Structure formats: C-alpha cells, structure tokens
Length: 323
Image 1: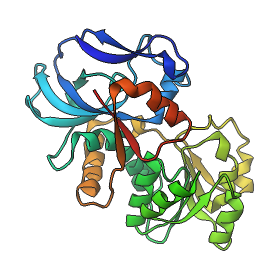
Image 2 (image 1 turned 180 degrees about the horizontal axis):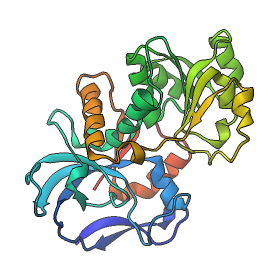
Image 3 (image 1 turned 45 degrees about the vertical axis):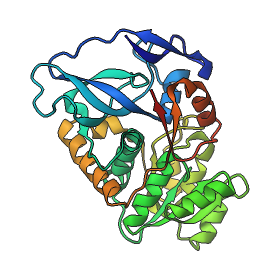
Image 4 (image 1 turned 60 degrees about the horizontal axis):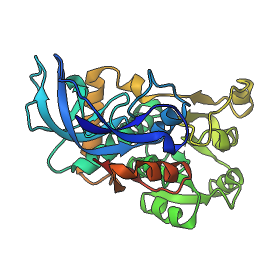
C-alpha cells in the first residue's frame, strides 16, 4: 500500500484527500518508480476542477515526478533498479510511487536533484517546444511572455534571453517584476497597474512583438493580438484565467494577418524519440546554467494549501511536493 492524493469528485482544493491505495506490479515494458519529488502544475488544477475531464473517478492528480526505479517489468533493457529518473505521465503522480511505461522515462543526471527533475520536466519541455519548434526564436526577436514570474514564465524568459531575444513580460506585482528581470526580461509590465498593450507599444516604439506566449487565456485575449507585429504569431498554451472562447478568425486578418496556435505537449512528445530529443535539449540548458529552475518544496500533506495558492496566483517559480 502507498499514500496518494485522490479526487472522488471535482471541485475546490478540499476535494483532494490523502488515502492508502494498492499499487499493482509493473507489467511488460513498465517500471515501478518510488517518487522522491512531485511536480505541481496548473494543469493539475484543470483536472481537479473538471475543466479537463479525468478518464475516471476517483483519480490521482499530477503529471510529473522524479524518483528511483525499484522494480522492472519484463523486457525493460534501458534501465535498471536504482536508476534516477524523471517522467511525465497522464495523472497519477501525487503519490509515493507509481508504475510508468519505460519509454516515457528520462534518465536524470546526478548533477540534477530529484526536486529540480520534478519541477523542470513538464514546464521545461513545454518551453522547449514553444521556443524551439512552435515559433523558432532567433536573435533579435521581440518575445512577449505573460505571467513572466511563474514557473513557466521564468523558464521562458531565461531560455528566450539566451537565444538572443528581447524579452518583455507581464507580472502582477513589483516583487514578481524583480524575478522576471533577473530571469532575462528586459522590460516588465505590471498588468494590474498598466494597460499592457499601450505599455508594450511604448516599449517597442510601435514595432510590437514577433510572438506572444500566453498561458493566461481569457483575461489577456484578445488584447494580446494587439501586441503582435503583422505576420507574427499568437501562441496560447494555457488558460489560468479561463479558456479563450471561440472567436471570429477575421480578427487575425484585422490585426495584421497573424498566425494563432494552441499547441500541446502531448502532441510534441507523442513519439518517444521526440520526447528524448527534447529532454536532452532541456537537460543541456539546465546543466550548463542557461536555465535555472526556481522552486519551493512542500510536504505532500500540504497539497490543499498549495492548490489554493496556485489558483490565487500567489506563487512564483515551481512548486514541488515531497511524499
């Protein structure tokens, strides 16, 4: 038996309960991982509230973790018992251990802690495809990042800055502005105090940005479109304030023949070889210090308080639960 957080019905953070559950042995091609650290992401809120539908109830939230392999299923050759790994999985990570397909495991170098491994994978791989594939950021590009002091935002700022982009970010407080600037945002807009569109136009002298990375959603759309140069790209990758509703595609014409996309990590990592390639790119920038993963740790028993803070936008960086 192991301890796990379970959701029997969707709703507020209080629907999460820590319970004892039985864990099955790994089947062929699977491994059993003892979690040392569990990543918390806003997608966990989406599943808990029912914004994203879980395949069944009750369910265990969580989509990433890092730990140690304690048992191998038949046919697993690439790993051995005792190996350090991080992984992405569809639900089930808010637990002391879980069974994972071996092809979804990422070998975790000794130079990267379990806590960093759990904090970096989902957000870091998302940043990788956003910056290196969805829109290939190049030196001199102007990049606009909403929620620049969040876990995703800090990674985007650092990596985009390292690629030679001019990074402009939005944040909700002066304290968060300092964090975003330290991460490489050359200009930071306090969205609660300023009209971010007017301020961005002033910062860029009317040239606007090549790409907007928007994980906020409803609260920043369609104003984000007014921040993009003609033929630029709007990239929506999250909806922390609520989803972007259906909109008239003619808006893209009116704003300058813009491109708009709503990519997902699952699509980019569907092929195990692509997952490993992206992970190597991420591990490279973390190991060499280009991207530093800002994180705080909390015990698993504090999961309700963690979700409350996450929804209230009171967090910065990444949060990691320790089982």
